[in-house]
Image 1 (cartoon, rainbow, N blue to C red):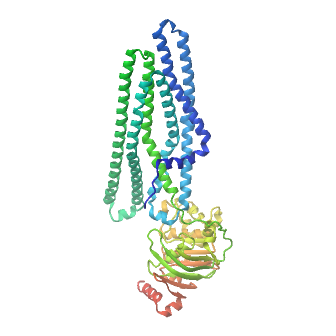
Image 2: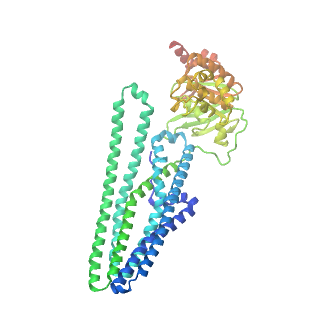
Image 3: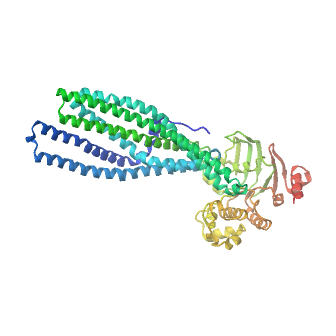
Length: 586
């Protein structure tokens, strides 16, 4: 998936938005930066005054002058310490708050993105963007305005004071600054690309690790530990090569700045020496000149060293913006209303659908009406669109063409939240969150009482096995419910729907992982739950849907057959073929 790239100017402009709530903190931070800078600039002036006075007439150099200069410098150092404490403490907290705000916005935006985005983006990459990438933003948010402000003040003051001492020499020294800037900016372009590659590769490593660890049972079952290790090592070595390139570029960067440092000192040595020889500057001025040039070079070197942190921060901001600029494909219409007390009639009008990423067409001009309270089963070959049809109702995807209506109104006219709150989904791929059994069932209706949770579990046929667990409802299920069997996880997911108690229920292979006894218990509970509610059931076990009001046979060409079990068996068509084949394999 192609990702947007940004210019440094655009990244800076977009990032400024996050400084708005902390403008007062930033302003005070810059004031403190100014105070620390003035303290540093004052020292060469004090030394210059004492040196020139001593060289002119040593008798003029008094204890009062020395102690007076020392007192001034001591007071300045007190101010410097207080200002530096604010910068190191409050300034860093400001950076951490900005990082927190950005992570909050990124996570909130991710919650609004469609299935298509997550189908095409590795979870490891996403995790890297909202964790590791934003760590560097804390330092960047604090140091970037501070460092550039300090550098600007020091360069301006240094130029003014140096020019006052000797204009020709100062102009000659400062001629190296733009040349150094041009060279550094050119190298920086490559550094930025290298850091972007580094971030991408660490995301790939995260994804590789996550994929391997979550699938560790499959890895062990096929005895492929060595293959997984080799694949990881390949990615690990690629990351090393990218880091080596980054450090090589930083080496070029550092070497070029040291070269220019040497040229500037050489200029001061030659020009200052001849100026002293000709009497154009005093020895004290020469000392101050060297000190200010040292300060200037230290400032430039600090900015150069900050360049690595700057590029890391800019890369983090860029990868953050790539999340924030990902299109929200499923959203509330401007005039959307809250869905209240739905009856549950669902109708498809000339619905066509193709997946937005690969344009694989699933439906073309599909028409279907499901009455309120009707139980409809959907069967058919794999790839016929059974799950896709159910995914369109809660708007996990939007139709390409046509309309889906609930109680006669287009589902787009309702808010997403209210629409999905009135639809219960039990998916084929059961997902349990890391936590307790109780927490996973209560997820169906946050705020439900313990009695309601236990009642829902009982209606789903899960109460019996839950009470037999070590800690009952407080048993930890492990990541993705790994401590439970497939059937147990399925019944807990069904219990969520019982607790939610929605008027529309979508069951995508809801009983596929259950044994015969559990399937019978859940089927009885589903009978009760389905009474007076619209229920769509996707099933491969055709014996479990014989009592449905209507059965649809869905193929790639649309609805091939529909009717009750008895009607379809008499037709001797596709449904009859599937049913008899299923019985043959029993």
